[in-house]
Image (cartoon, rainbow, N blue to C red; front, side, top):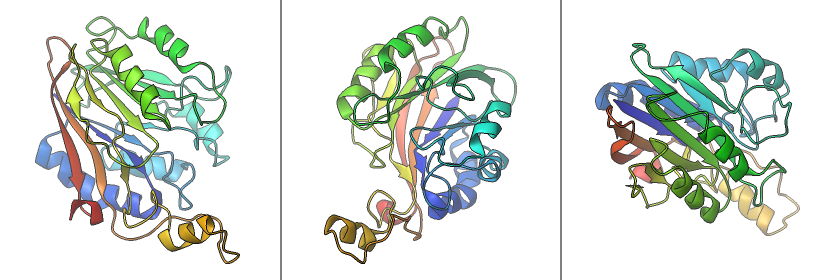
Length: 268
């Protein structure tokens, strides 16, 4: 059983990379379940719409996770209540629309996969305590009891929170990945107790940019140039960035984990 997890899809170039590259990636690596973080997928790089989500599902995506931009498109608050394949961070304020974790079946209905979406507390929008939320959910999502496999998307700014989350879930989850910073880290590995981990799996988008945003305008912003405008995504060729986890069907833990970098300037 192979699970493909892709980092934050950034604007048009990220969506184009998903649309043109993902079907071939699924065939090439024979992946069985696909998770994509879609919180930056809208044209302006902020939020996701119903049409974009359904476009991803049509290309083979099973679950879309998110983060601090989940509410940037007003329509999402209604759509997320009726589409359980779109998750928001579980530790948002109680009563928020949608859900932060769910159990899904693989396309062949053979396995149950739990997916948890969490968001860090440091340098992010105000949320409930992420580690208390993780502790609570870990009692509901138990490998080989409630789910066959378990994936955690930890959307956070700082490496220490993500690493702590990885070790917290080690042995309890198939995989823990970090998202949000849009730059893939080089620490892809299996932790001591069998959980695959990477601090950040990067983004799907144009890397000839500043974390997916137009580089010329970003420089102007840092220089406080009066000609600078509101950030907008770069639109060159996008890279698909993420990981592929091969699972141990007996334990629900990871057998192997491989970084995926496909296309665009990052892959050259």
